[in-house]
Image (cartoon, rainbow, N blue to C red; front, side, top):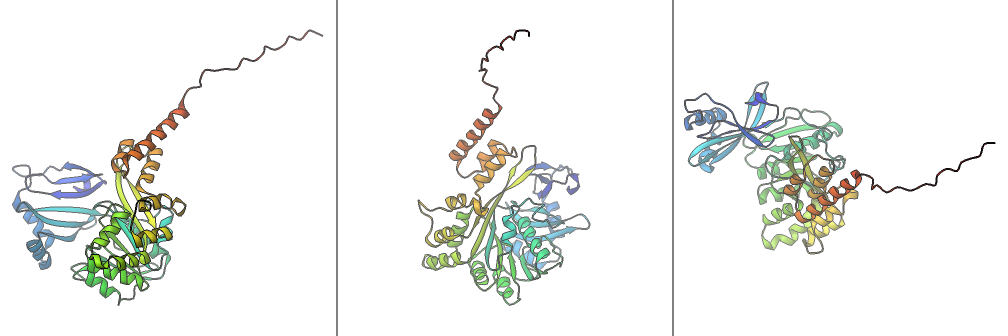
Length: 379
């Protein structure tokens, strides 16, 4: 399945269907040699047993919670992040292919502001987005930049470990959930005693982890983490929602003091096939901290603050989508599907089209009549 195309990102197995491959966001079936041409429950159970091996923790999680996460490697071919889950009483599997080569900021085409981000010495940097939007890849490139340029201790807490970072300038210690620590809150609490300068938390899933992440960022660490949110405003609201109403004001003060950047990202369909990364970037400024402290209002929104921060290298999704449309990288339909404000995006797209039409129009046909040249008498 992996060998059919270099663009394969996911393998999916479900009862009653052939194995499914995802390539650039599109699902295709892979023929399987069974009497019915589809995967049976017993076959998937055999695959699940092979993937879990003798790991009793995974078996307990699957039986108790209905799903579990693990990693799997095919020697000299690929590594996978695996989720095994139950659906309608039967087992199913999703395997995400992991990149073997650690990307650089330049290879991903990330803007110059990312080199400023990795120079932060304390605080929290969030990379957010839906599952499969490339959050881990972006973080891997940022940590790789640190590894190439700074002699520091970097500690990661991951579920599972996706990119294996070699020791370069930095000392890397990578810990895996379930194998090296029981939960993110416990792993992060222990990390504070392990003398790192940089801590990566694979995902902030609950209040306890968020609380310790803020404590770490307040005590001289820079914390990188992810959330499953689609923009800066939703990220802040999700964090506030983890705490009680009585704690909100103190929490807002701590967020204003610790949040350095919120990067939200999506993968959108490119013209000609494939997908491209589109990001929203918000940094810390006086206006950002004020909005974190007092909340958004009619005259003060994260969207407006980001739009006005282009001199800092910030931009909204809509600004990034419009720029990609102007460069003919995406269609107007894609821009409208993924934008936040459809009416404004429609007006902006219409304006771009009008300007293009004006630049390609034929001359108007008007001409200036010049006087005929006078005849000179022969000398």
